[in-house]
Length: 172
Length: 332
Image (cartoon, rainbow over all chains, first blue to last red; front, top):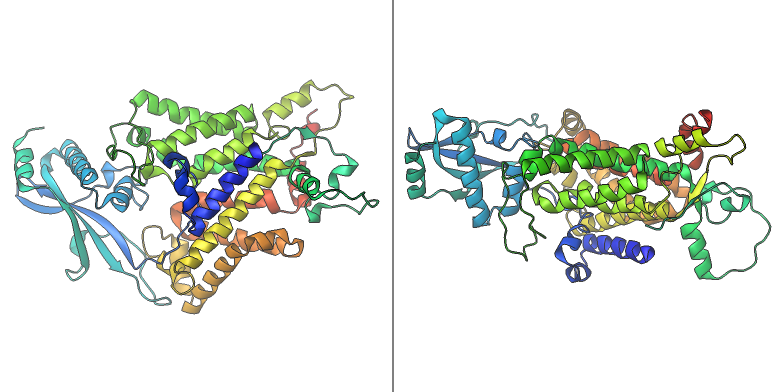
């Protein structure tokens, strides 16, 4: 029995990585999840992706970048943090983006009451990767304003104006 | 995942079933035996206890090290205080099972229990029970939160289950030390070999990981793209990674990429053939060292794989020598 389980598990891991999905699809999703471990970095990154947030500042009535890293303290400074992972998996999932919106607004208004926001704009930056062998400066996180306006940006979510107004009128 | 009891070295234990580089002198010709029997002998034949003990140490230590940056934020990780995707209603590949956030006390109890189980396993204190508990807890941690599930934590439950089904506590741990303290002066010497099923499972696991990953890479961009180079330009980049990135010419990256792909695709061959095994071990460890030094948070994955690689494929003499100074018999 143990031998059969071991062979089945190893076979499922190997087939999933090798692109043979039929066996995996036959497994219950929670079981299959544990077999999806060997497909590691198969693709080249086209650009370095950074996820950023602009908050709708209630007092100035405009969007400006807010640093959300303190609201996602697990591995806050790299792409294993929950905000990056959330956007990596769910950038097209409206239900998750709405939850993320509510979470960021609540966190910002609780921790920075002098800079209340009514909503968010979530965007990604696509920072070009130079060709191999070309010297590149050390990676550092820069504010959005430090990047040229020509840098590719994609907007994934914006809180509706009615919701922004309503939240700005609420007191914490 | 095929365990068995520990055993003391017997003359027959070293013949045929041990890895070729561990064989002693050939004995008298054996009677012909069937292929299924030979396969069973190969699978369950004796292995040096040091391999299993090193696996018992490496697996929980690497997994706990990976989890530690999550564990210190248990509230953010497992309770509604942190951000959690809502229930997507099943059938979503990103959420294999929805488990709602737990209260704060439960979150801290779970991470404390995980730490205790992992440490108990590593130090050989009731290791089989600890491994079972560690497996169950890591199953929960992985399913409870997709955002913090990575290869290290997703592999942890099965690796721990394999340890729980093995005699991994027979030597070099608290239980073994306590047994040696109670032993009478005429007692048998400490176990030197164990039934090999669990070690064979870990050896096969590594080959499956490497060859599966190699095939995925070959089907992806590794034959034509600049994959290694491209992944060094974001916040995974370490100081060492940046230095190497700027020092290595373009062709160097292609060569490194080719070595990695060749190593992974051919791993079943490299580690099966006795005359390529040591070279493969060196290349594999070099690859994991490079990952650890250049790709920031991936260091724990590198530690897990590199540690298992040493435990599974390092020459027996090296392992025995490394463990010799910690033998319980010195304290008996």
